[in-house]
Length: 323
Image (cartoon, rainbow, N blue to C red; front, top):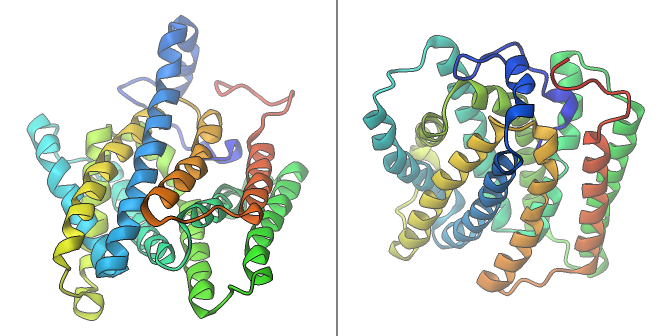
């Protein structure tokens, strides 16, 4: 899920082919092959949404910190042997730096998000997290010097109003308490990190393969969080191990699917698929926890999604990706 304005990263190559050459060769790709990145992205969103449900279950059982660390370490243990078997060697300094950067960001992004899941319904948390690409527009302005177009400002307002609608639904029902406030604060912090993550993910996907990305994503994240074990760690509950194992497998599979998709299609084209996560979250929230989806949540989600769609929509005068 990336605004188009953010995706013009410094020149890189993928498989020895420059992005311009990749774009110029797209005309020769069969139409069925062009659909594969979208199918991979849809699969990735579904897998990661199911992972969120398992992680909420595990976090409620054994705590968000312990669950997040174990998920990352399990995921690294699953995927690392495949990376080692490929014998591609240690990534060079430039690639390693971006692996470390995303791993650190993802570690705290995941911890704050899974903590929020212990306080909020799954669909509600996913809906509010959709503001991340709108926030990313402003990160792109500050960090990349990109111009924010008027439509992007209006899109941000829509997203903010959508968030207020969801929160207002809670307040209107008298359900806003300290736990809800903590969950929302953690979720907003996670969304900020997710927004910054957008600046990193596509460049990373063009510099390394899915197996390598999944290995370092889980390994670096787990290692960073493990440093806080003396202060935040607890003995994991045995009943949490099964959902944690399922979450680890789903994390690896989902990360590889998304990395494969983002390396082969423009992020702006994949944006609409990301929003299917709300449908999955609604389904899994009901199936796992009997969480009902309220009308304010649906209305707020529609506003947020409308804002994201507006922000990432190409204008008629926009340049092609190859320009």
